[in-house]
Image 1 (cartoon, rainbow over the protein chains, first blue to last red):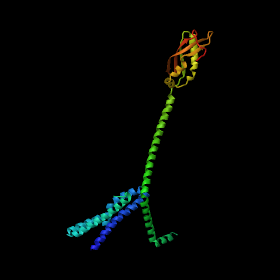
Image 2: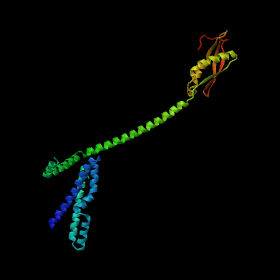
Image 3: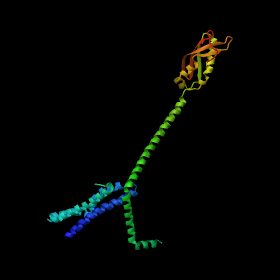
Image 4: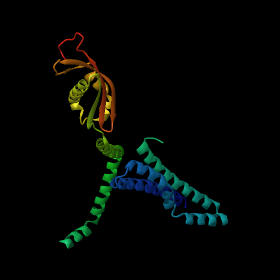
Length: 109
Length: 179
């Protein structure tokens, strides 16, 4: 049970990170092909994709919210806490991706 | 041949995917290495386009202005009045002096015919330089010598009209040279 929790947390983190990084890189290529500023576009995409990366990582907002309802109303607060950790993990992954892209482009926070 | 290609593709699916991934990886690497430079070059290009557009607009504006000015200039040139007639009024004691001086001065001023009235109007000192103290010899039995003084100049209706006063120099000591 505990292992599954950590596996999911790491997966959420990496999926969110991958969505941001992959989206930004391929978006940058698309910008280059369509004669736009690639780095500027990558920076904007990193900001825009952050929320969607989280959503993709945790598998849809409605499921998570429903899980909250079930676990809290069912008195299983530890499961609700797990959901919060998953969301935070996905957020951290997406944020890490954004920060990495920012480092790459601007050379700092 | 097409079948062969499809068969080859099916056999080497993994290779094809790896090839695609390689392309993505390579272009990503290229983007990381040259991204900043591309941004800079694109920005420079846009700045050049902008400057070029501004210059083009400026050229168009100047061309329009030039066209308008040339139109205005040609119409002004058409409207410019020129001297068609020169009239000389001489104030002298003897009528034969009047006629002779009139004829000679009119001959002297003949080059002013068909010249711009504005030009003479703006530079009346030219006439003064030519006519003031001009000595005229009248070929008669006595060879009368007179000196001309400019009184008035008028430019009206394509006519240059000049009033002169004549002073008889026959009685006084004068040189033989004529100015």
